[in-house]
Length: 329
Image 1: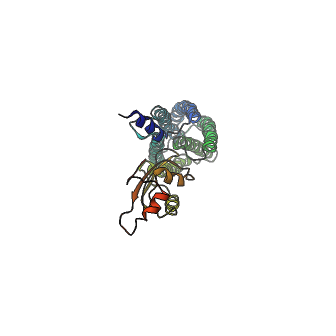
Image 2: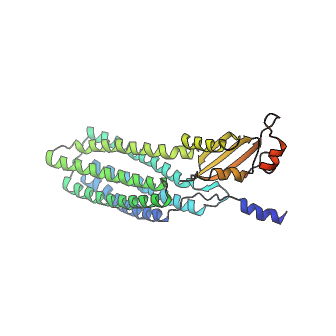
Image 3: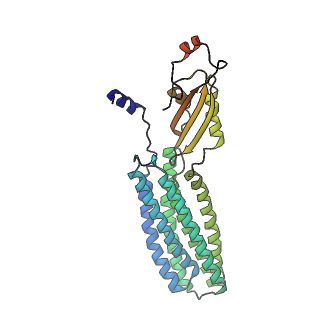
């Protein structure tokens, strides 16, 4: 093996570490995990003891949020540990996106549980100890608002640092906390109206309302993360701009263009083009220097065949070096 080739290969090798490094977000997610776990235990016990469906539903669905936060923490850890692992073609950056997708599924299950239990309580109401249940629900709301502040404050900080959005793992955790806060607020409204106006039907009805809203949040998160996991292409205008930039140079024709997300904020591009006067791949990569969303670019250069396309030999010698067909990087 030629040792000189090995050193040259190191110069041309591209970085495949597209995992989103977000240590601060991971630390805050851990704090929120423990806050949610403690509140979940308190609300489940209090909801069962005081007879409040809204409070009990809030506690049980916080249990699925605890699971979601565990998924988020695991995703951060796994992505960091396997960031440069050769087992993954473009690193483990999509693990955090998978965590967000899994959390969206958990939200949908929460909504289904809340809906079924609330409908049952509409037709079979239970006695409620309003004073005690209101106190616990307010405690849960305070914890949820504190958790939301922790995650939202960091979410904005991280977007400023990276000039991109989103950390879908952190966003999923934030949506779960918002769902917690929403159900706590609905529980308080239901309990207060039940105590002072005798509207006991408000307790299960608020459970139905909360289930519908959480379902909407879950669907939105699925729409954000699902296409990324399926390697959906970048938006059409961005892809068109890439094509136009390459084709405006000389007589290039882009014959194949694929752009897909390989991490939270990173895209890979695989491009094939045909030209009468081929250049080395690095030349075409330099044309795409302003496309900062592209973190990994592979260019295939094909020389046009046929006498009608091939330029005179004098132009070939003067304008560009001789390169083999289908040169790649």
